[in-house]
Image (cartoon, rainbow, N blue to C red; front, side):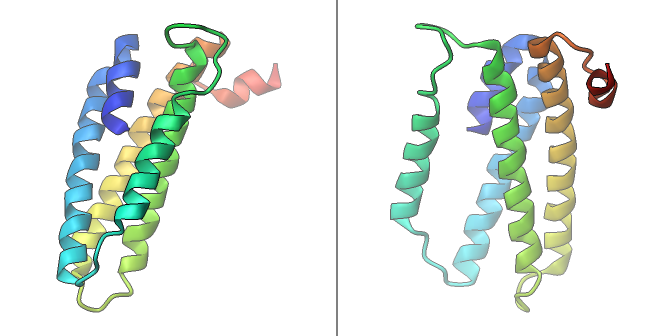
Length: 145
């Protein structure tokens, strides 16, 4: 999903940081798979299939257009990415309670998630500014007017 978002939103001028985020998300997924193997946790194929299906179904949202993307799609997809990164960060924080998992590695993953969130949030604010016609700088300034 992160790669698709980087490609779609990237056409609006913010692709480079999102492409980097997509690469980091893929690396984080590999870290998770490795940790699962080390902890002898089998991945749930059913959950994998259902999550892929859910991601594909989310693309079918009505956007008032027969073809193409609405301007709101960028905002919604970036919001989903922020939620996903936040969930991943919570997972890394929960794994700190597992004694056999390296806290140094988890600290790095937690910090990387925080940086990813900050970057995606900046892109989300830019997209919201483009979509809703306000300034991309300060949401609170728009709310006061």
